[in-house]
Length: 423
Ligand code: PMT
Image (cartoon, rainbow, N blue to C red):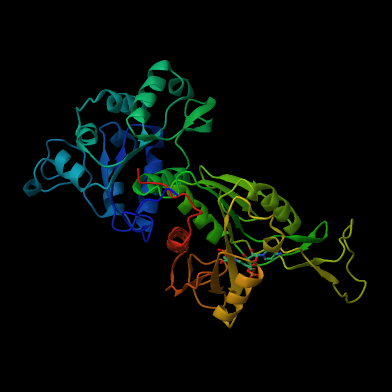
């Protein structure tokens, strides 16, 4: 077995206690950086904005200043700018204070300067001085993005360890359609989360996660389902991805956007989900069943819409197959985590499910508790495993809980998981 000591615990919130320098360069997409700054702050970051001269032609520094409550860095030589004179050279002080530098939007010119180490303004100089992770979200016209000079600059940056996101395809400011739009905000935030997470302790692990509800059709317009939003499974997918895992997310119908750098497999019914889990289980190292799979479905589904007005109806239901009970034998030694959604007798019922479903671990949550269970941003859970662990955790964000679950998987006393290292 290859094991590595974990050097730090997983973060408790995505960007809490992180200082993120947001560099904004001259692009029509500069206005989108305002919303990005807001999202970073909402997720706990201290945001320090630095703008190039051309960026200020698109958006005024005052907008960012009012939003972040901090002066915006615009001038390499202005001591009163973002950094008081007492803190020394602005570019060095900003570089030192940053946990991460994100440049969004990054123009083709900015990408070229970064690649060649040019330092002729505050942003490019601090980028050169910064020792923190750097994330670049380019925005430019499609023809520019595919120009050999830009391709070579992007390659140089990536080889140097800079995270350069792929621009989005769509309508461009030039009126053309192509690849050059600023990446979606969620993709930028995920890249930041990944770059901030130094511990890749799931590197090489293939993690299969289920999320969301299933829908069981009554007729072509009606179905029975449940209140799962998918947020718990989404948080697990993001956490596992950020810790280096290859993640497949089998998701029932939800309103959530796709998770960047995660293979999302959409399903509708419990039977769809069962087939996907069974097929993909053999190629996985860890399975986490966070989905609220329907326990019952209509005994028959009508091919046409059932007409109203035929008097009261009784719905005949049949049990759905239990996916966890149907798993093929764990020849490859997969680690299986179930969830237990309860409304009372939490630990007793969860422990019974742990045994009945032959799980390695179960995450028990009381879905009637305020802030816990369905649809919420937070959850409170008790972790139980077959080695006897029983850990009642406090209320926390679903992302934090996801990290605690992954911590517990790695802490399980077994040599079956090949643990990855730090990077
Ligand atoms: O999606 P959110 O809005 O964020 O809400 C999160 C959640 C409440 C859905 C989640 O935290 C949770 O509790 N998920 C499991 C819900 C559930 O179905 O629990 P259960 O106790 O009924 O099932 C036990 C386990 O068996 C679960 O891992 C479930 O996925 C699995 N199961 C259930 C039925 C079935 N036919 N096959 C299964 O494998």
